[in-house]
Length: 201
Image 1 (cartoon, rainbow, N blue to C red):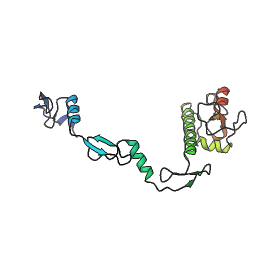
Image 2: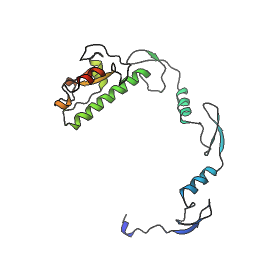
Image 3: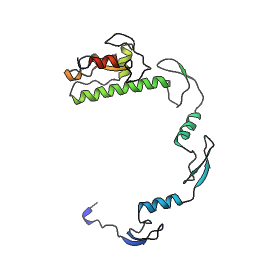
């Protein structure tokens, strides 16, 4: 498209359908300002509906809305799933899934998500220092080390989240600030408190 030959939209004098004020706008403009547009939107007729999940009455501007909130929509979708019982692939406990392809219980999903985030953060820090980087997740390292701290050699409680001193963290044996790499050979499982006290030693 040649912008040099593009003609601007023609502006004509129109009357605002909300306040009646005359203004300059294109042929499709109805309101002179955003405030008038908002007033017109909120003055339109409301629909009184019944939530499909919690059965409470609510008002809406659209006739197609069936839930009073986003939470009710999510809960209704989860309750529509078949009430099957599965075994967690990680801890082998029994749980009820909340979505079709769920393979881990809620606690294990939280642990795996935190561990993956630690791996991504370590990789990002290593790339900033132009260090050698391998792609792996923190959960892979924690499982390899048996959830035992490589600094104090005591067990790590996977259910505790950061910043608790006994929570799990990914420790670089040779720190990135001293030329260490983000590789499987240079990382280990460690308590957050032990890792913090070690600093860059």
